[in-house]
Image 1 (spheres, rainbow, N blue to C red):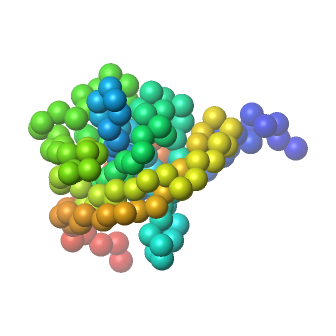
Image 2: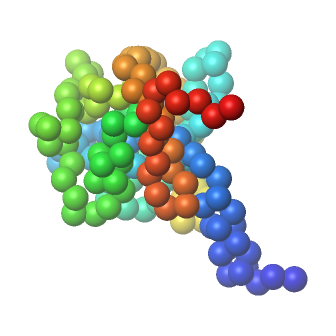
Image 3: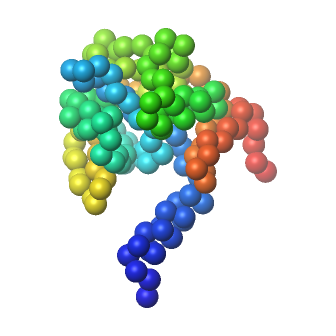
Length: 166
């Protein structure tokens, strides 16, 4: 039988082998915009529209958890650097050249995202050091399809539009 530590390490390794889509979740706080890169975004329901994601206890995560609303910006092939910037502390965020704008409702939105989903928290579920957020989606803005960005084995990997595995 494996110890909890060994099981945790194997769990981490298992998910490093599983490619995942990439998003930047953004929100407006009284101190300004916050955001983080997430590979845990999943569709929960179409009727009503709902999604989920999980976050750890960073400053940005706390801001998102405390915000009344947020935007899940689904990223494409042109966003690998942006995903890396929002995944690391001290990197540039919400700069003009990254393409950020504000929705009329006040949330930061990535104008060139493949899709941006504005939502509000429905359930916050603490699990260990993480919080799982289940959110109602109120608005979906579709952007350009510029290929795919996936997170796999601690790397952001891009696949331009039109490349298909057969």
